[in-house]
Amino acid sequence: MERIQVGVLFGGKSAEHEVSIVSASSIIKNLNSQKYDITPIYIDVHGKWHYLELIAVQDLSNVVREVRMIKGRILENKCDIAISSNIGNPDKRLDVIFPIIHGTLGEDGAVQGVFELLNIPYVGSNVLSSAITMDKEITKKLLQQHGISMTPFISIKEHEYTPSNQDEIIKRIFSGVSFPMFVKPANCGSSIGINKVKNEAELKGAISDAFKYDQKILVEQGVAAREIEVSVLENIEDYSTPIVSHPAELIPNDEFYSYKAKYIMENGARFEIPANLPASTADLIRKTAGEVFKILECNCLARVDFFLEQGTDRVFFNEINTLPGFTEISLYPKLLGHYGIGYSKLLDMLIDLAQNKHKTRQNKITNSVEILSTIQQLK
Ligand SMILES: Nc1ncnc2c1ncn2[C@@H]1O[C@H](COP(=O)(O)OP(=O)(O)OP(=O)(O)O)[C@@H](O)[C@H]1O
Ligand SMILES: [Mg+2]
Image 1 (cartoon, rainbow, N blue to C red):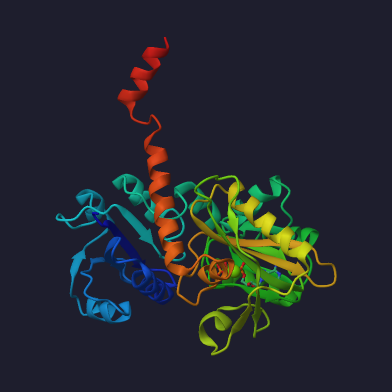
Image 2 (image 1 turned 180 degrees about the horizontal axis):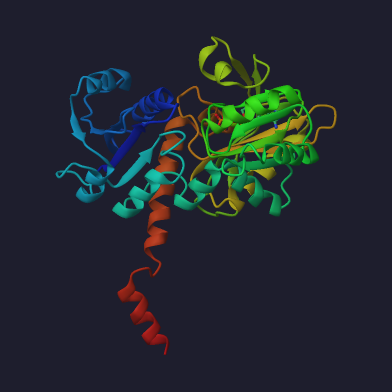
């Protein structure tokens, strides 16, 4: 049987560069080598693409270190890749790409657009869904329309936040949201630019801080809550019934799950798998996660994060990640492992889903010649 040519795309310019390297190492180690021929493709911190040879990679960090000394093939920019139409290597056609770049340019539809142009199947959500889910404001507004509960928030665009307008905007914040508040960039991740604000004196500073990272920010009502996360996997048999893991609880060792807790502190957080929850609460969270996945038209995989308010047990949607951390110890694969889908099996399922999604799309009439001839036949 011919092996499936899989490109694993990793690295990238976002703050989650190093996590991506570890995720890709785990993926490459766990892809069944009888079934797949793997090509690692590394995007360095400057955005340059490197096409790597896979020589018994145990830990991609070593390979990446070599690449940083400018080995391997360097592609100047993404246009080169689009033009060559087989991700840079004239001798090899990739059957499917597994992008595992978290955050900006990896998870937001940008790189997914490149795959669409190349007409290559890829793991994960499409351009539209990736772009929507990267934007916390658009995601929340869409979900609100479908009755998904969340904490009150307002969004502010940088062009509105002029010195003469600031007091008006602060008033608007107070009419919808009270302390403590969370001020965050609309399109970011890793808790970068996020501040918990407890009083008015801190508010303007937090707003300026968030605007360092994005042109749009959110001011959210803070809730005293347990943080509950679930893994969702698309069901290849029936899109309307996604596979949803049991919930996990994330317990940060900081005041909230900050950048420091995520990446700097030795024991920044711990996870409880499964979360200790009443069955009815766990069921509600799992059901809501499946709904969120479908409303946002996600594909393949997503991790959906919730708040469970202390005292009231109300469940609020917090956010969704369409390319969550994928190291062997990351929550996304661990939760599915707990559910009974092991890491290698999960990779098989994701690659099947990617190829299936592509095939379904190919069946649609999209090119102008076919469209015209179909319309002619209808006449
Ligand atoms: N409204 C809120 N109420 C209480 N805590 C909050 C709120 N918003 C954010 N937090 C805290 O801040 C953390 C980071 O917020 P959020 O998940 O929105 O950011 P992120 O940077 O997109 O995260 P990720 O890296 O998971 O994509 C949360 O895990 C939680 O600890
Ligand atoms: Mg988060």
